[in-house]
Image 1 (cartoon, each protein chain N blue to C red):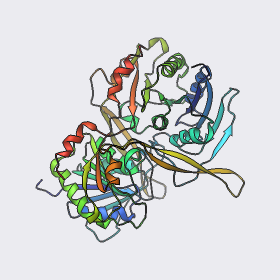
Image 2: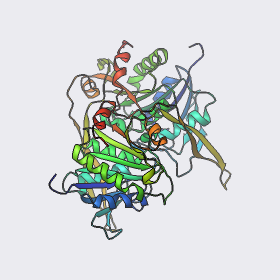
Image 3: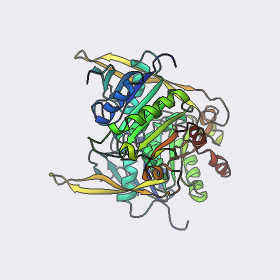
Image 4: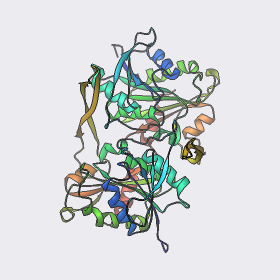
Amino acid sequence: MSKKPLILVTNDDGISAPGIRTLISVMNEIGDVVVVAPDSPQSAMGHAITINSTLHCNSIEVDNGPQQEYSCSGTPADCVKLGINEILERKPDICVSGINHGSNSSINVIYSGTMSAALEASIEGVPAIGFSLLDYNWNADFESLRNFIKKITLTAINKGIPNGNALNINFPKLKENEIKGIKICRQAKAHWIEKFDKRINPQGKEYYWLTGEFINEDHKNDSDEWALKNGYISIVPVKFDMTDHKNIEKLKDWNF
Amino acid sequence: MSKKPLILVTNDDGISAPGIRTLISVMNEIGDVVVVAPDSPQSAMGHAITINSTLHCNSIEVDNGPQQEYSCSGTPADCVKLGINEILERKPDICVSGINHGSNSSINVIYSGTMSAALEASIEGVPAIGFSLLDYNWNADFESLRNFIKKITLTAINKGIPNGNALNINFPKLKENEIKGIKICRQAKAHWIEKFDKRINPQGKEYYWLTGEFINEDHKNDSDEWALKNGYISIVPVKFDMTDHKNIEKLKDWNF
């Protein structure tokens, strides 16, 4: 690529989160950066989009970097739609989302605003990567990830992400020199056992907080959970075709 | 099955929508029905869940039917989590979601609250079906679908939905006697070209409405779009493993 790549950056923790600030800073070393990100936290928004209310989008300046930034009232998927179709003058060369404060490995991908942004870009034909760190702290150590993120993004730009895929990349909570390497993986089979914490509000009305326990049922060594637990960065190619092709013939036997 | 099946019913258009009222009425002919559905419309919520705010859930009575009903402040996926883990005394035999007012065929599955509810049930090991009618009218003709919905649900209970799958079922906007049959399909390759309708509010501030045009790039006769266009009901088996397994080897060639 002779010109500098045009890079769309977004996230789900909101435009001021430390994770996206590190990601913007790394992307500024690679290309021309435009940020379109939510004005408030949008974690666990899945692939929600805003169709029954209005969207606001404001040009803002956060630091002294060369990037353009837009703060948007919508979901992560809205931000990508706005970025690609309204704000950017040409299709970006890549869309990066994150760095998420917390894991998006395994089944978490389906609830993830970070990954829904990346998938939305891939639906629109833009190569995309979601980055997440297995640390929910607001002040997690994102700086340790700089070299890996730069290397992975440059490789993705040069080699090309397979059509119709977005990469779901999770980092273990380790220092840079403790990370053993990078593994290409599949999504582990796992689920959450929900627990609803039932409380009574000052008016005497019941309400719930959703909590839960993550259960990994999958102990094979080609899954993202295995890689992360063993000190590796996990990369899972994720697709937006949700058809379970192998079961189409099985269902044809239902003989409607 | 000797006992009556226990059926969890939900949707994304809200508990008072005509689509879910028809679905509840059909399910009452099949089994014991518990409804846990959003108290307000939650269309296009994707797989959002509520983790940063509280959830309310109230037992309500809507009509004189035998079903139990709960109106919930959360998303469709929240309703299913609440239903299975907090409200129902045993795991339901099936979860049905809908009938959605509008299409969830093709790429719409990824934005769909109706299908996220069904997928959430399948993640929790409960067989699940999402039903949608290609008619956005509040007073669409859901009655024409009764016989098909009953037949499909009974078949799914008897034959068993493949593990890890939810069925995405869309009905063309036709009279019962005009429907040609039922086709097992794959998700068509299609996307939306977004158009943002930019307006100025009374305070002089810009805002947007998201609109768009649906583009079907897929003209093969095994897709859901083809089936619906040709007068058939489409059934797509949908899975929550989003890994693109065929591209794992390709990415290994990146040689990290």
